[in-house]
Length: 117
Image (cartoon, rainbow, N blue to C red):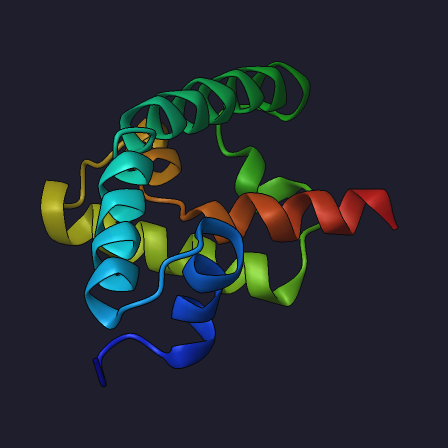
């Protein structure tokens, strides 16, 4: 019981009328199992969206758009990490697509925050 907080388990008591700790934990694990089935769908959506954004930015700013357009310091740091990861896994001949595939979701958040301000 010490692994899962009481605050988290209180949801199962309040909304699902689970009384015992065993019921609460069972409901918690059932929800974990259910939510994990959505991960592949979310991952595919993220990849499709990332690839479409990358394609459009390539059209507007060239293949190395992530080095050309104004981005936040946080985004610049994430680009550097993506380049380092690409260099480590692919060697010095890594491609722009390698860099984009190594950009974290946080990069895109910072990118769009910058453009929405």
